[in-house]
Amino acid sequence: MQTKTKAVSKPRVRQDLTLTVIIPCYNEVETIEEVLNRVLAVGLANEIIIVDDGSVDGTRDVLQNIEAEGYPNVRVIYHERNQGKGAALVTGFAAATSDIILIQDADFEYDPREYPALIRPIQEGIAKVVYGSRFLGGPRKAMYFWNMVANKGLTLATNILYNSILSDMETCYKAFLREVVVNMKIRARGFEFEPEFTAKVLKQGIRIYEVPISYNGREWNEGKKIKWTDAPKALWTLIKYRFVD
Picture 1 (cartoon, helix red, strand yellow):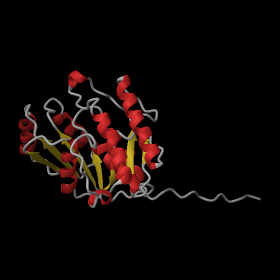
Picture 2: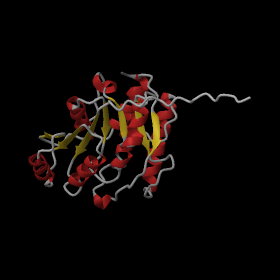
Picture 3: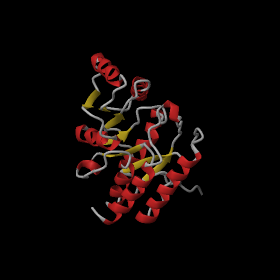
Picture 4: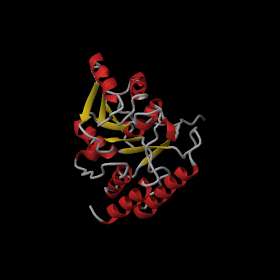
């Protein structure tokens, strides 16, 4: 007697969800055009918003040339003065119109070919927020030891304070439904955006989904901007938002 096997249903994938990629940019004259080309090559972004945060190295000339090319889904917003990554992202969030927002740095540390893995948990309805983790086994260029210690230390502090099990709180690659930030008041102006956003997501009761990504960290002489002084600011941000709204 043959027994019938029950078909396993596959999760429904929402291919109709639109995607906005936000690229905060400050003094990235050597990389911004190629980063944009890589994002375009993936072919998933319905909207690409580049927020130039007061660049003074010729980046604005490159961006003006990009605007002159007339890409239908690319928009450039200019800050008159440098305000910080957090401020650039807030500007981008306010301008975004798609269902999903994904943050992309303006250098070559993160690979846009990771986008399908980052947005799939959202498309399948199993997550509202997805982080790309550099510490879940994906290929990566060796990081500076003390940068790794700072990253892991801040992630540990996040897990203790917010009862989570993240492996990479400081990652750039954050993808999320736009509804998550519509009413979120973000006060960060610099790199403390990462802990503030994470804290406020977790305080909403949203569990963050992580996927492994590759990482090609750049050197200081290549324009890496985050400094050791940003670590204490990030820790204070985590502590502050644990106890205040």
